[in-house]
Image (cartoon, rainbow, N blue to C red; front, side, top):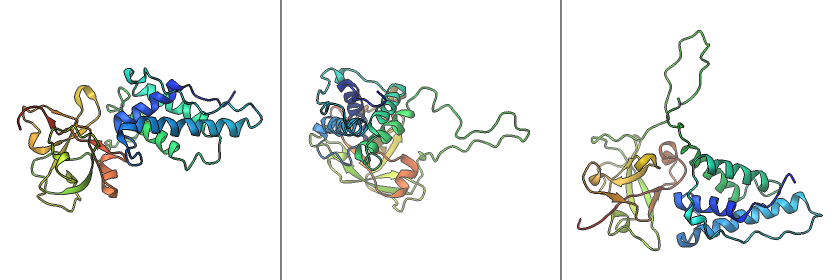
Length: 252
C-alpha cells in the first residue's frame, strides 16, 4: 500500500516529542493532556488520508492505542525527522491536509528536530561551490540573540504558565510579561529580563532569568514557556515557544 495507518507507537513518539519540547502549546489548552490531544489529532489525519486513498477498502477505524511505553523512550533529531516524514506521507492524501493543525504540527516538529541532528550547528549557513574561481564570501549566519550585558533593547513576551506550575516561585509564576533581548526591541530597562543560554549536553537552548546567568545557582525548567506574536520574535527566536528555566531549589 502507498498509504497506510501508522502504528500507535509511531504516533505516540511524535506526540510526546511535541509535548516534551513545548512545540504546540499555542493551540493545546491543557498541558497535562497535550500529548493525548496531539495523538488524536495525528491519528484522525492519518485515518482521513487512508480513507481518501482507499475509499472502497474495509474501514480500518481510527488508531486509538496510545503506547504506554512511549514515555520511557526519547527519540530525537534524525529519528523524529524520519518518523515525521513517514507520517506526512501517510497522512497527506485527504483534501484538508494542507490547512490542517496536524500538518502544522508535523512541520513544527521537523523544523525543531532538524536542528538537533548532530553536526547541523557546525555547518555553514548557506552554500557556495568549492570549485568557484571567485573567492568565497564569508558565511552570513542567522541572527543570533545578543548576550552582552550592556544591551538596552528588549522585546516583551507572554508567559505560558502550566496549570501545575513547578517553577518553585520563579519569575514565570509571578509575572505575565517578561522581556528578552532584541536589537530592535522597543523597551528599555525592563523589570523582568531573560537571557537565552545553550541547553545542557548540547540540548535545546532555553531562557534563564538574567540575574541568575553566570552564577552558581543551578536553574531548571518549571513547566512554563514564553512566546510572542510580534514578527521580531520569529526573526530571532523561531516560531515556537521557548522554555524558561527559572526553578531554583532551596532558598532564593
